[in-house]
Length: 167
Image (tube, rainbow, N blue to C red):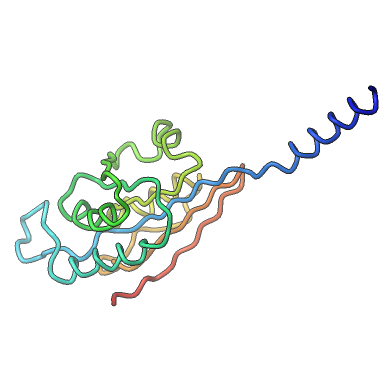
């Protein structure tokens, strides 16, 4: 009987130590190209190139599993995120850029793969908050092609930027 107990405890301990650590992956992008014809419009829509880029993002994410798609409440971010949320059959969720990566957001997204659509200043700031360090500066105003990817596994956080070309 002691042999079986020892075997059971040993096997359970071995399996527990081999458990796969849960990962959280964040994809963060800036909204696509916006309509700049009215300089006083604080909430413009996407222009033609922006609409094409939003479709391009949807195609990029088509074969990438996503659990959620988040956007700020501006027209340009919603219009950028919507094609991807539709392709993925996910309800578009709003986030407040003044409360990004707070404990509520962390809990809701832990262990998931998430797309976050923001702005030239909020996207790198969001990445910096996730990483816990100031690694990235604001994006250039004409940069609508950068994709920030952050992966958290246990206490380890990694990040990289990819440029996604427009088709």
